[in-house]
Length: 232
Length: 95
Image 1 (cartoon, chains in turn orange, purple):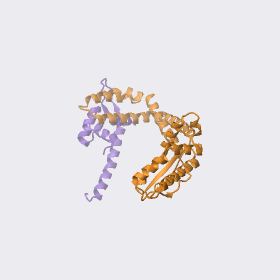
Image 2 (cartoon, each protein chain N blue to C red):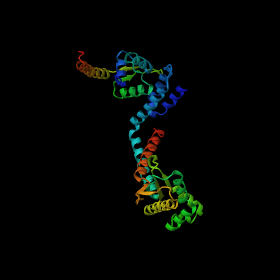
Image 3 (cartoon, rainbow over the protein chains, first blue to last red):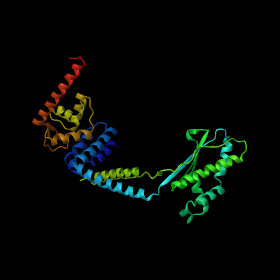
Image 4 (cartoon, rainbow over the protein chains, first blue to last red):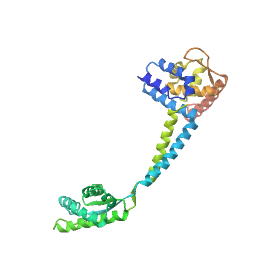
């Protein structure tokens, strides 16, 4: 098995090298009493080094061409992806029982409340032309995050992810207002307090430099593989 | 000293050897186990530089010979290593 793999690894060397050293290399492998996987790894590394030695310019040229193409393509794709904004508020809930908190959040995320928010802010205008309202509400629920920062029991964050920053901010703050309203309705169950109102957020997605860099690296890697497979 | 090129030159200084014989000899005198990729990578570089050459035989296992240039190169490398070893020993107080 290992000898067969080593024979296969020998085929990764440049043709000129194989013509000169291929038979000797295989004879040496046959002479080795018990070659291990370390020998396979060594032969693989040797093949890459020899390809670079013999065809370094071809490698570099192909990696550069496909790397540049990947950079441009990934950059263009990232420009087609709409920005997404996440705005969140921090709400204090020091004396609020967890069951009250849960009930309040459930009420705020109720169908009726969400429909009100969708109508008020005219959210998901394009999606609404082609999807039923229930699907829109499901999408909205997925875009609302409620979490406790660092597992805190005394405060929680409520945020909204949307393609428009000011709208994400307004909806997040409306969700907080609705929570406060719910809280006032439940007498003697502790008070929510707004610690940080939701700000007008910067876009969190897509990270275009990371997209373009990934395209560059992916393209360069493909170029190197192409040069290896089409070795002379 | 693990540079495969010097190990191969040192091995061939004793006499002509083919690939596997070099691997065995190097493992014996330097305690270094060279893989086939490293060995033939170094052999091709040494041959390119004219420091070793393959003897023309009909067999698959070609023995290699140290050339005069290779012998000079080995002497130069050993001299440099000797100076390095002497300095290291002096600094350790082991003159």
